[in-house]
Image (cartoon, rainbow over all chains, first blue to last red; front, side, top):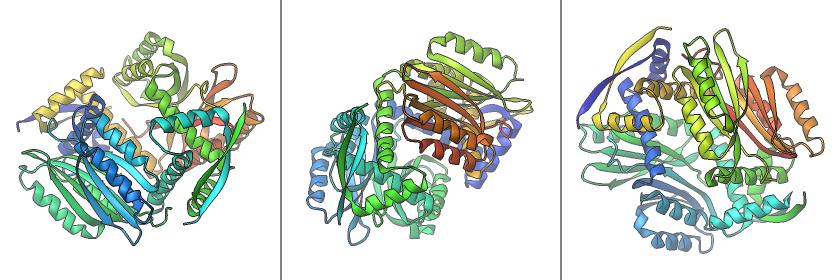
Amino acid sequence: MPIVRFSVSVDADLAAKFDRKIKADGCPTRSKAVADLMRAVLVQTEWQRGSEVVGAIVLVYDHHKRELLQRLTDVQHDCHEAIISTQHIHLDHHNCLEIVAVRGRPPEIQNLFKRLKGVKGLKHCTLAAGTTGAHLP
Amino acid sequence: MPIVRFSVSVDADLAAKFDRKIKADGCPTRSKAVADLMRAVLVQTEWQRGSEVVGAIVLVYDHHKRELLQRLTDVQHDCHEAIISTQHIHLDHHNCLEIVAVRGRPPEIQNLFKRLKGVKGLKHCTLAAGTTGAHLP
Amino acid sequence: MPIVRFSVSVDADLAAKFDRKIKADGCPTRSKAVADLMRAVLVQTEWQRGSEVVGAIVLVYDHHKRELLQRLTDVQHDCHEAIISTQHIHLDHHNCLEIVAVRGRPPEIQNLFKRLKGVKGLKHCTLAAGTTGAHLP
Amino acid sequence: MPIVRFSVSVDADLAAKFDRKIKADGCPTRSKAVADLMRAVLVQTEWQRGSEVVGAIVLVYDHHKRELLQRLTDVQHDCHEAIISTQHIHLDHHNCLEIVAVRGRPPEIQNLFKRLKGVKGLKHCTLAAGTTGAHLP
């Protein structure tokens, strides 16, 4: 992919402080740090505009709760077109971590998320927004 | 697990509006909606206090980028104690979605997250905070 | 305003942990803590639905920067219908804190916010979303 | 203040998409957009590190509620060292918007925020984090 080199004018002190911060974070170059910030702005825009996106829905629950597993699986089947695959981890004797990799338009993913979140007995349900990368260098 | 029933006094109009909102979201009962809000407050507290937590790190990258895959794998091996398992999805000819299920103290997970985020060539890197559920009914 | 009393059934351990958390935060009663969480959900909804809302735009800038003060004032006059009043604080010899109290439909406020944020020389510009309280008990 | 000019190498497509996004947002130059992102990262760091910061606490309440006004004023007096000034707006016959401009170390401001948020009868209470600008060009 072609690279462009553009220059940015900022206050000297801002550049120095930013360099210290990204060094502390282990970021190798200023170009990478700036490009990461630029990309994060664009991923937000993809979700706002309704582009195809990906994400991860993180669920935590006690699989002993009656019918919980069945309901979560039913919702996932109803919305199977928005789901790529599901990773299931047995955290302890009771608790399960389930990470659902999702792909689709934001409203489809929001709908799946709402339906999962609505299932009784869940301890935790969050959605991490990501990007397909197709339109993002 | 024992259930308690406690009563809450709120303005009638607040209760009515909240009921409409959770109905629109597909939430089955007011008790569930309130308990979900209470749990979300406590999950935040677990991350602040440094309890053992779980989460998901979502990565998107082009696997054709030189050495990128190698570096991501190296970092994951260095921090293998904080990683439960990794789900890898081939989004298209170029792009990969990798979802790393993590478990540990917040500083360990933050360290892994910083090191992954610092790898050159990534398109996206976010961390979804979760809970082990062990201390959360 | 009429008060309703409704009861909530949650796990005993969740109730106990939540009580400890709100006590640590200095919240006087469980009813208040729950009602605050319910209200926060509804304020988000007001912004999403486009109801009339209020908020505060927080600006920090060096008033010695050429034309900065003039431009900020020009933008505020262009959008005066969305502005209630502006509080100006001289932080030190250089820096000003300006807090613009705003009221209107979310798109009008977002437009004012974008225009202020676009002014060259600003050090900081954030928007705190609030509510008119008119539809929120 | 001295300006530095540094160059950033990013994918051509990323630069093009970012340019379209900031143009749509009304941001005049790429340098400004990048510097704004850099500053936002540093303001977060100021709050994490406990530097002196400023902010705005936004309150909405019905002034007819018994003793509410008195209690809010009492808390503000107790914490007067963290408060610069308070802007009070009569939103309608019932509702007041109060914007408290604050300055101090993050724990002092968090303490004031918690105490205000704990007052019974408030409809809304949020904190917008800002910067003194003293260490931020």
